Amino acid sequence: MKRFAQIAAAVCSIALAGQAGAAVINYTDFSSVAGLTLNNNAAQVGNVLRVTPAGYYKSGSAFSTSTVSLASNASFSTFFQFRFTSPGGACDGQGCGADGLVFTVQTVGNNVGGAGSGIGYAGINHSVGIEFDTWNNGGGDHNSSNHIGIDINGNVNSTVLAEVTEADMNAGDIWNVWVDYDGSTNLLEARMNRSGVRPTNAILSLTRNLAADLGTTNAFVGFTSGTGAAFANHDILSWTLEDRFAPIGGGSNSVPEPGSLLLLGTGLALVRVMRKRIR
Image (cartoon, rainbow, N blue to C red; front, side):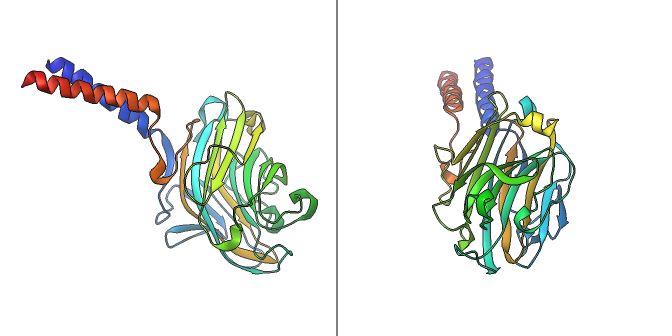
């Protein structure tokens, strides 16, 4: 009987371990920035990571100090929260504040690209970026000052782009973002909203071999930003990343996968049966 109880307990442990995942980066806030390299104007401000401050012609980046090994052909899943505040300077006819933020996976090193419309990403080769762009740079931005796009190899003319219609990203709201790349299918997807509940449908998707773009599966991961004649505070509030394809839930609405729940329930049932028998 003792042996059966041990087996049941082991089943519970396996289920919980599977539930826990394998987060290699996990910042619930940025009261500490240990493990990150901050470049140019990026700074820790209180418990947020301020990639660029609200000032003219700033650029900044924050990357993992060490490379992350992205298993299964560069697969990864990440969730982060950002907020843009104190927009100022020039306005583009659709709003004020610029230029936005780019979640970046890159292998050149811990660096920062061009400021202004470059959003701190322009010119970073062997990279993929998810841009959150708040300035209308004309045709390359589909004449939009509030959009999300997928950028490749330092080019800020996005390969695919979608208008963010939920709200103006410069309005000071907290935005939740999920980015997943499955190296087995080469599918890259991005989701975002203000509610914190992971959307069923992606706002952007692209089929592309990122391992070929990167040239390796060992990469620096982080964020870039830039300002020009317009500006805002571009802050990251929290960030989690897994070095595999393992889509992350959002906030209190996150639940274990059905397989984990079934395994966990089986283990708990076995424990209850064995306790009754022992009595």
